[in-house]
Amino acid sequence: MMFRLFMLFVFLLPVSPSGARETVVPATDGALIETLKTAQAGDILRLMQGTYFGPIVIEVPLTLIGEGAVIDGREIGSAITVNAPDVTIEGLTVIGSGSGGDGLDAGITLTKTADRTVVRGNTLLGNLIGIDVHGAKDALIEGNTIVGRQSARMNDRGNGIYIWNAPGTRVIGNDVRFGRDGVFVNTSKNNEFRGNRFRDLRFAVHYMYANNSLVTGNISEGNHLGYAIMYSDNVRIEGNLSDGDRDHGIMMNYTNKSEVVNNTIRQVNDKCVFIYNAHKNTFTGNVFEGCGIGIHFTAGSERNEMSGNAFIANRTQVKYVGSKWVDWSVGGNGNYWSDHAAFDLNGDGIADSAYRPNDIMDHVLWTQPAAKSLLGSPAVQLIRWSQSAFPAMLPGGVIDRAPLMQPVRPEIPVWKEIQ
Image (cartoon, rainbow, N blue to C red; front, side):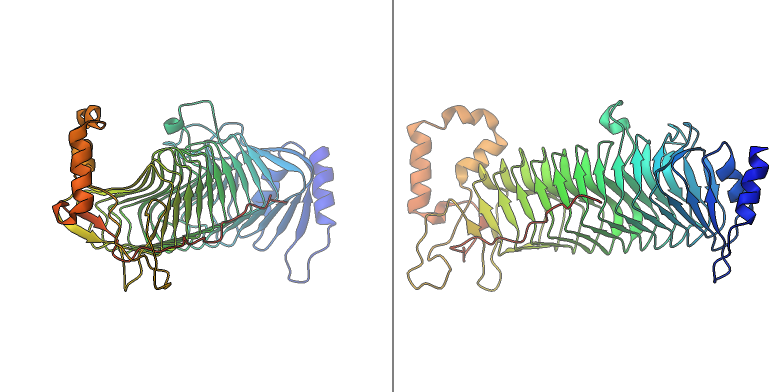
């Protein structure tokens, strides 16, 4: 009886001028699933306040709008699966994904036929993966709040947003907390991650084999690692913040021909930046402040340009073990070093003496940690005095031939709460 009344209510609704139906779907058992079975391309389904039990599958291009509606997947697969292009999902609370599916059960899954889907302004709570863009092209994930699981070990949780082979996906203005990684992108290209906030995660943004993409204006707070760019080329990392992350603010591993511009990395317990076997990258206009190590680069990382950055109050400004000199100035423009006691007699903003962040004893201590017990000995002090008096004794390493007298201060992104 209730279902017949519901269908009569649906048929009496007016048809929009475009020919698409706008249907108000009541929160009664099975109503949404039955409506989806007969939905036509372009339909607008408005869900009333209440809980709609799934899982549900969308097979035609339509708009699903919630006004206080909850989709509960009942821990069976993905709560919502989209198999059609040009779908919009907006204003829902999505809970109750499964915990299997080869680890791919999600609050919302966009399959490879879900091109140009828009997922906007939803709240996804406690799902294995928040949103899985699995092969869909040109999707927009915007303004969602995603709170992942906290029960399992961090590495066993799902990601907030998982992107696999989904060129053109844009992830903009989302708030992601808990779970494993905020955004994990694998085998994709031409993606944009802009203006998101990531907290209490393993990695805020995790790139694997993802080229020609943009990471800009994001905030990483209190994660194990901020921005992990791995096995990727031509990535632009611009204007992001890493604040209080544990291990690294930015890690570049087998990443080449990328740009790291105007980022602020501060108060990271271990390293502001870790560069491993990464080549031909450009770092400019960044602030590395209050970290254990400003930049640690190793494993033959070469032809990386460093200029216009500020290294402020890091316990060790640079860690580099090598026998050749690496010049960190470009076109007569170097970097700012807070521990460089320098003069600028001609007032051109460039220090009158070069800066060398490491000496022979640094190299000894990094390769032979037991030598730390000798740090206060007269012999070590004599070696360090001799190097300062006779720079030709230095064994190689980083040299900034044009250090700056004033630090850069790029604009720091500020989070605005999602309305």
